[in-house]
Image 1 (cartoon, rainbow, N blue to C red):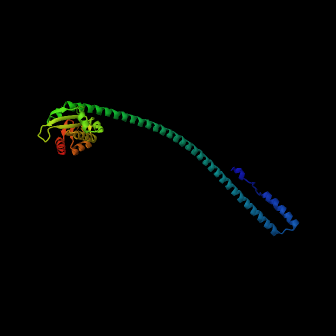
Image 2: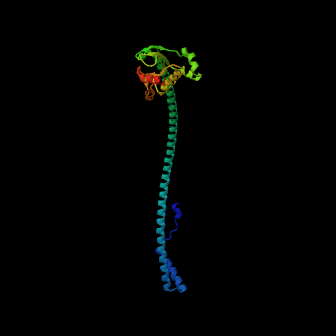
Image 3: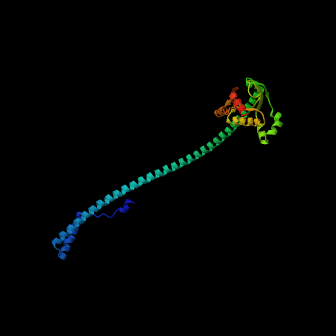
Length: 277
């Protein structure tokens, strides 16, 4: 509120005015026969009026000073509000930039995730191809070098094609069983070097780059199908490495294990098959 709006007319009773008032009062007294006591009372009222007028002037001065202070405070408040609006606007712009950056990073992260997934798929396929190549090489090696791996326990070792046994197998196995059996990696036969209760042993061998529990189970299942058809087949697995699960399964289930060319559990596996027979 403007300071001028609070100002009121200021009255000052000077000595000359006071003298004129007294003259007029004296004349009125003489005309009206006013007593001296009435005049004294009037003077007292005039004095009190002067004092009140002075106090009013002081109060007016203080009010104007307070109004000025409020105006300054209002000005400072408006300045702070202006600065606050600027800060809020800057924060809003910074937030917008941050959100845009986060969106960009999210898109980049999504692309990276997709690229990593694609790379993982390619790597998995490459590992599968490598595993198949290693497995195929191992299969060929066990066919060609069967004597190197089994010559100390078998003699007259032969690699047998399941195709040569097809007619006999069809008489004992179902179509589904035969389809499973013909997927066997290597089938070998030989005569035991140590005198045992059987004249001939067949070896159902599953070959993999890394032997795991699934390979052991597959060898057991297909050896059992051969025994169902009348062939005394021992389950066996071979590979460059063996998982912990695969090694444990071979040991507990008494399946012959060839790991990097080293033979394990032969006696246990043969003894179990002869006992079952």
